[in-house]
Amino acid sequence: MPRPGPPPVITHLPEIGVTVISKWLYNCYVIHDGGDGRPFVVDLGMPSQLALVADALRAHGADASELGGAVATHGHADHVGGLPTLRHAHGTAVHLPRAMAEMRDGTRALRPPGPRAVAEILPVMASQPRDLAATKEIAGTMREIGWDAKGVRLPFEPDSWLADGDRLPGLPEWEVLNTPGHSDDSTCLYHAPTRTLLSGDAVLSVEGKGWFNPEHVDGRLSAQTEVRLRQLDVEHLLPGHGLAVRGPDVMGTALGFAEKPRDPSKLKALYRVLTDHAGRQARGVTAG
Image (cartoon, rainbow, N blue to C red; front, side, top):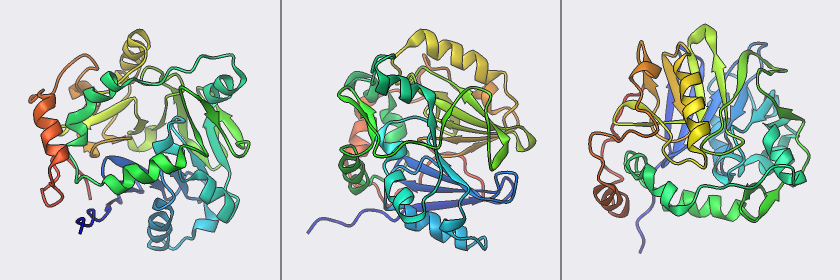
């Protein structure tokens, strides 16, 4: 019989009012108060995370029906796969990057990362307990929502398209930043009062540090994004993949997108991913 996958990893960050819900390297975030008292969910990548979001909300005296909205940092399936289920269950407002609309309308080319680019983040994949069921679940959602080389799939019209500098209803203290490079619709959310960057896939983490994503479709745009984000005052990095990182100068100590971690071997990382390492202690820096 196949071994059961590891349990999801739930990390509460009370000092910034955020809960991290991780299934393997796929992170979903609950912001318990976006600034006007309502909670928000960011990067709900799979339907099974919705029950975990509801649990996190109940622990803070709220309910999933009270969500002020859901934000996706970009339109890859592992960041939007749970949105149709959430929308159907609660009618939650959904906010997606404007570049997705341009891809759907044909005014912007579809440029997904290729397999060689994906291989660059094998060290990130190896940093958390492997859960192949999560990957299978995400693959199943790709038929309904998200974008890839074949097109853009949206089963509903979002409530707004995110533009650089936006402040969303319900999230007045969080600023939307367009940060292309990994993808043309890559987006971050920055909360200056707590020095928190919810970075999507613009910045990952590896070996306890931030890592500007080496998996990109445009090196020039990645370089521009890196310059912009390094100027932010960040103490809490909440990446799309990898462990949360905390420190006095997270952006200053982050690896550049062209840099390699201390152990750059893709072969070693692939071995760790392929072998059963669910019982290993995840490496990195978390807060709780």
